[in-house]
Each structure stands twice: as structure tokens, then as C-alpha cells.
Amino acid sequence: MVRIIAIALVVVSAYFYGFHQGQNKEELKNARAQISTLERTIEEFKVKQTSDAVALSELRLAESASRDELDRMRSQLADIERMSKTNTDRERNRCLRLAVRYKEVVDRADRAIKFCAENHK
Image (cartoon, rainbow, N blue to C red):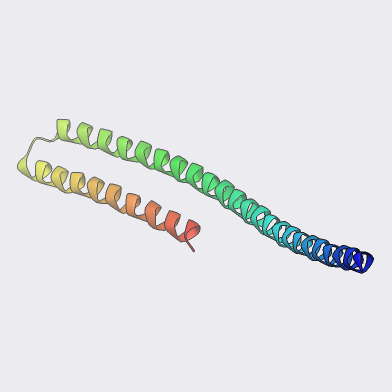
């Protein structure tokens, strides 16, 4: 009788041990799948980060070129204003100054729109 109980305990113990091992294998399989998914997500974000860094660098270069162009235009305006003698000349200079400000605002808006269009699809 004791032998039967011992055998029954061994069988029950083996069942629970096997069941526990099966659970561990399933959990390990799920963990590996999650790790694989996370690694792919990390790689996608690294690629996106690199793309954003390149786009930001290009944006900075374009902004620098635009600032240089605006500085050149302002310098030309200052030269023209110094040489202007009549009210008509001064009025024309005010219009040119407004044109420079308008160009600056439009350039900023264009860069922002281009950046958003390229990086936030």
C-alpha cells in the first residue's frame, strides 16, 4: 500500500514537474517573441532618429543659407537708404524693407512645412 502511494506521489510529482516545465517553456517562448519585437522596434526608431537628424541638419543648412541671403539683402537696403535723397526713394526703400521681411517669414514657413512634410508622414 505504501508502495502504491509512493508511486502515485512520484507520478503526481512528475506530472506537476512536467506541467511546470511546460509553463516555463511557453513563458520563455513568449519572452523571446517579445524581445524580438522590441529589438525590431528599436531598430526602426534608430533608423527614424538617423533620418530626423539628417533632415534637421539639412534644415539648419538651408536656414543658414537663407539668413545669409537676408543679411545680404538688408545690407543692400542699407546702402540704398544711405544713397536715397527724395521721399519717393525713401518710400521705395520702405517697400523693399517690407519685401525682405515678407521673404524672411515665407522662408521660415516653407522650411517648417517642408520639415513637417518629410518627417511626420
